[in-house]
Image (cartoon, rainbow, N blue to C red; front, side):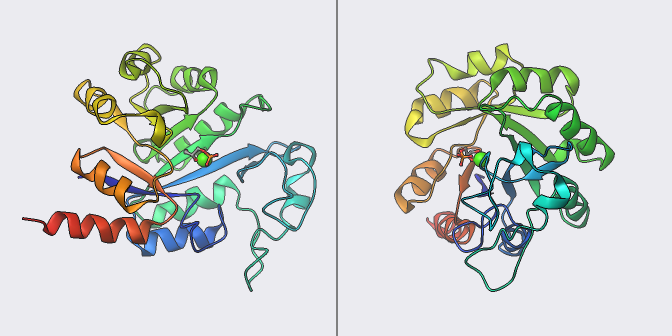
Length: 242
Ligand code: G3P
Ligand code: CA
């Protein structure tokens, strides 16, 4: 059955990429999470979508120019009542010891290469013994290949937003076990063709009821959605159909 992954946590209701958003996704019974990582000036892997902290936090500047200690002072829950820091990846992986969620770590290294990011993430995943519950994705496919070569035991999935011809052939060529396409870039035939060829498909970002139903009908591997509560409700209704 199609799995439900919470995009940046339960980001429809909670500040994206915060522990609150991840805890809420767990509480909602999501199967998995998607989160984004960047590297601080002093080499800490932090969970934030943009290269700059400006949009999502009370701070300013590039993540790559800020030490972790400074970054932790910013509020990543600007619109909420409770102040919340940008999580470190360590914090998320520690919390994952207490649940069974799958976590899709998106390496945000398509603008800045963040040398060593792959190795740091993999080292942490191994340290917390989460090899089987992590999927590494990225729009930077060189990084996907490097991740696979460094840790063949961890699943990888290239992200893309263009229509690729027979994407399962491409995925197999870089030893990825899945693909994470933008929803509009994949037809039912492409999704089915990929799955028939052993490639998992997890389209993003799937928020509309009609799109969720479409993917449930073809038993797509997973959907990445901002609203796991809504998606799980639709999935429940779908399963009850005669
Ligand atoms: O991983 C799917 C999706 O998160 C990729 O786009 O910009 O939301 O990180 P973005
Ligand atoms: Ca992402």
